[in-house]
Amino acid sequence: MKEFDIAYKGLAEGLHRFEWTLDDRFFAAFEGTEIHGGKVNVVLEMEKSAAGLMLDFTIKGRVRVECDRCAEECEVPVEWEGGFRVRFGDEKADFDGDLMWLGRGEGEFNVAQYIYESVLLALPLKKTHADCAPAGVKFISEEEFERAERGSEMQKMADNPEWQKLKELKDKL
Ligand SMILES: [Zn+2]
Image (cartoon, rainbow, N blue to C red; front, top):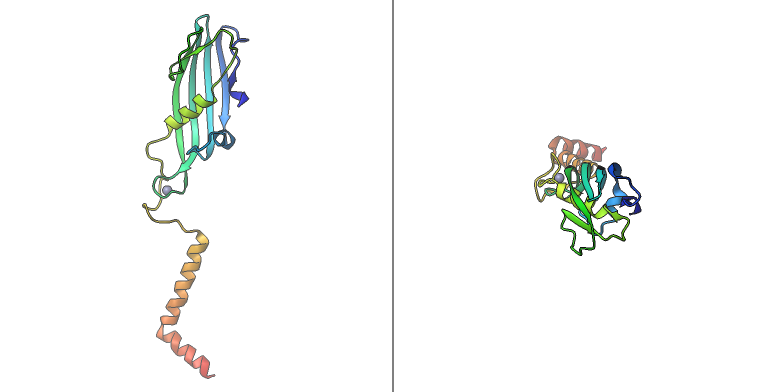
């Protein structure tokens, strides 16, 4: 995802602002993700100094996930703030989520994975519809419901003795 590349080399020292809107396409790029899609606004405020970079992300939006209760898709809010530091040098330490080392020869790095993982961290503990059926109850469509109701109405009529009498009368005519 090239649009999440931060080409810091050409930037002047000082504050820089980046903004993205994550959509279904963004989440689909992460294989096996529990996030089906959504719309999430991401703002990055990045300060460049001689020492390195300071990144602050603000993430806010809504994503679609499987409901913990009924297993249908539901929409939940996500909101998160955080960031990390970048230092330049030939230190070979893995990124621990707080400090990233970039070699002198590198000119850019990509923040898509970091943003994605931050959205995962921002998922609420309870991922459910505000109002849905208790566990084990399968949702039926409006159409299925109407059909079932029509069926029981006809059954009720057939069971009604008045209806039976009418029917016998009609058969005799
Ligand atoms: Zn539900």
